[in-house]
Image (tube, rainbow, N blue to C red; front, side, top):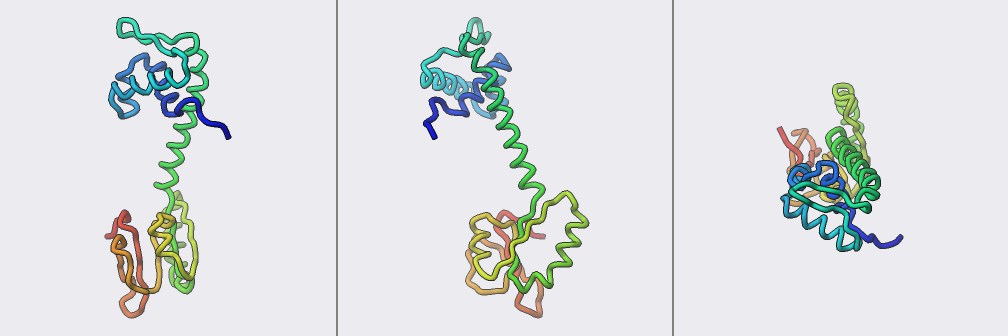
Length: 178
């Protein structure tokens, strides 16, 4: 795999400046400052050694090289938007659960009921005997059901789900508890 001649983010910034024909509007869409947009365009031009944009009387004009780059920058922008949508949908419509093996017998019906009530949520279960809490700390699960074996990391919230036994619910700090 070769080295990039230019930063892909700078190419996306170029696309937005070219299509908006305005540095400030591009900055607004990127949630950055107008000077940051100017800096990214300059960096892209410097790194590539090619002038892409000319500004005259606050109006943006593409050079021949800029016009030729535009379709490629659009492809990159479109792919970035697809990736952004994927990531938004992936996290908001997914629930990754880690369950200690024996607890799956007790929680299976509860999970099935959750799936019926929330058909748009992808529920992924990993059954395991060990390592679930560590995986939770590595953000591989949203929630874990494990038998107690303290001490647990202080970053986690613990909630006992059955008072008469030894089952414990473990969630990351990011997981909202009732």
